[in-house]
Image 1: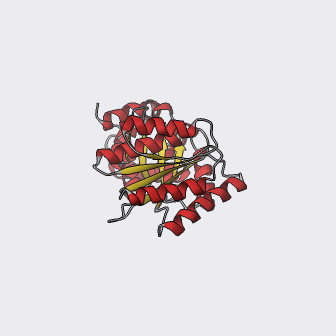
Image 2: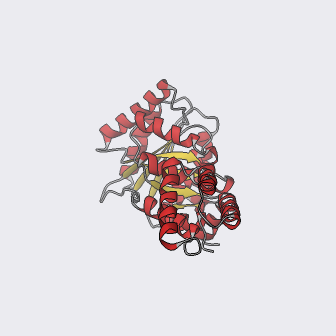
Image 3: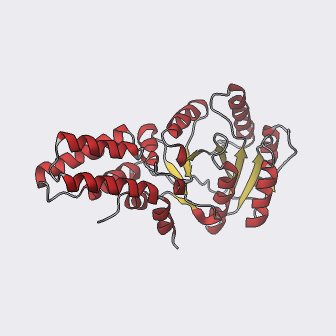
Length: 304
């Protein structure tokens, strides 16, 4: 099964909810009225597309209805087109520095799948003939270091680690040295999960970034926030707060296969202007792939 098929399967809950409700509303009343416009807006908001994106889609729907009439416009094609246009405008591939190790810091709250995603990202890099190194800078969560080492052994990627309770900045320093000496293309740093409201933990993250930045100019070159799609629009609050504390360069959205709120991907990029770099739709190493707006829009709003 190709990734697009896995993406479609992963977004099935979101798609089913959207398609079923939209078809029900339009079939019952093919004319656009204030009542069914309200219903359609509620369906889009229910998929966590957000207010701004919902208004954008509905404005395009009204315009198409006015020019083409009830029989001429295709709600799904319009939704697909608007989402693809919105997401495509902000697409930015993963940064890669020429002739130098690119450092990526993976951040987020507890339980979003940071460690697993860190390993899957390394696996994807390896599939692109790039050489990654993993840095185990989560020195607090029980078994975090072992988990990353197990992944490293499974996908044959080196892991730089220290002891539990060690200073994450010190481990980060060692990881940068190791990655540079190996001439690795990438160093991916797995940081400890932390709530954006815990100022002491956010200070620790800033210290880690400061230390590696002194060691390697511009590091971290990417700071990617892991968001759990099942949290819906709560993820928007997390993203906003993290972005205020530590400047983010992009997002990785995980667990899209377990939610009916897949529209949050659109809402977050629309409202924060942060590009979605990768999405995850399963447990296997290759279930994390670069974000493709066209595929995502087609999986969310399928062709009739």
